[in-house]
Length: 143
Image (cartoon, rainbow, N blue to C red):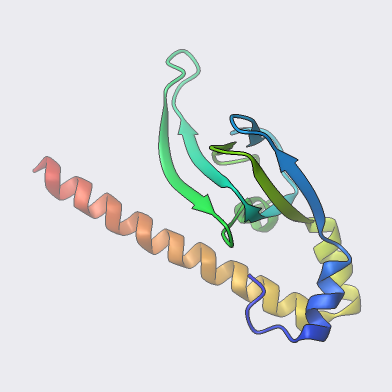
């Protein structure tokens, strides 16, 4: 997410990052709830889970993220409730960046903000491509 940023630009971002700890089994995000931040995993492992209808309470694991991965970026772009839940599979430490802090960054360090948004878009695009591939494989498997 911070690829292409200089040390000086990284320092500008660092002032907005907030570190948090989540014990194993706890939820960092809950599907359908509001979210205004992107999460960057420093340590631990997080399961991204899409829940079915409330009556069934079943979920499908979409991905597992670990050190260096990020999630929650969709809500920064589309300002919608969480599309999925994020659950700590082990004790997990993250840093977060809110959309409000991104806005502040856009006013003080436009180039840095632009690079972060471009990196967010690239990550979303990579995930969309991977999802498309999984969908096609599943459709062909049904035939």
